[in-house]
Length: 426
Image (tube, rainbow, N blue to C red; front, side, top):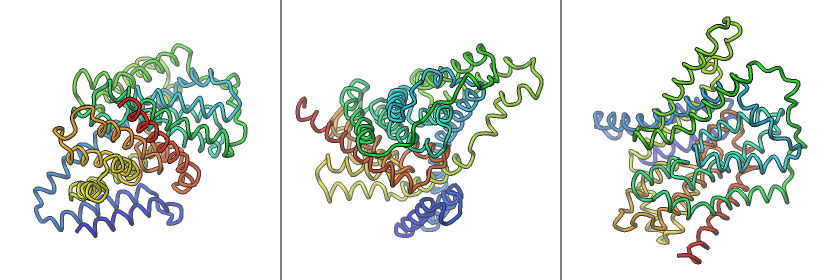
């Protein structure tokens, strides 16, 4: 069974990677892979009740991620429809692509720590569309956004799903993750930016769009209100989670409900034609449903491998074959570029009990950094990458050729900083 599952996953992965060669949308390949993997698991397991129960459990987790993704996308689209991001883009005056890379990189880095890497990527890609006209020019900025979002999410307990898992599980505390992982995360972003500044060719000079010539579709009051509610709502999600202990998608749904109500009341006096593009219904139509289905298929496929025990077995094999904990964690981080980091971290949490590694042990903090940033090495290695891939139609091999090396350099720079910190400060 394991061989057949692995073969199916690899073939599905290849179909996604070669999307343009096989002329099949990656969402279709992902959905087929996910369903076939679970079918194989069911046929070889034999216990239909147990397998269905496992599928329902995984589907609950997957649905939470998808609802969160959908809610965040709709909120961002609604803010965009009201020209809310103009408030930020109007303040970015540089015409230098190098300066713009640094600005976008560090805005994304710090915003990701407050929100999370997925939401931040959605917001920043939407902002880039307001600043950079040419889709080809935007690709480099989108690539840096993925690296910055994952680096920023790694040093915050709410910035990435894996750090949140470790925080809720008691493996890390807020103070420890911030103090020990912040500098490695900075290095993870700064090294790719420095390398681009020094060595690589960047896109031609980027001239921000001339805002004065654009006819605003909304008044300043409407624009500011929706922007404040939208961004403030996204910032409220982690607070809601902390206060209620409900999953993040519940927070995003209540924010969407409030914003939906406010915009309906805000435009109720306008005719259908005037308010059509300013409604949540219109925003829902603009959301890239194919990206959501792609995410669904990928997560279903990975969850089948987790249920079959293959990820846990892989982690145990690494423990026996390598032995050195730091090397294992670095390997897990790199592996998360291919296989989702959530089940990998979950497997690590199951392999190593708290009695062996107590709270804030170096193993857990290093795992938070590596699992959070290693996924940047491939475009489908993280939720941020998948979101950017769907929104900007980034080709797998373009990212592999142009961005993966930068992400890898940043990843190992952060690893070096983390290990150096351990030597200097213990």
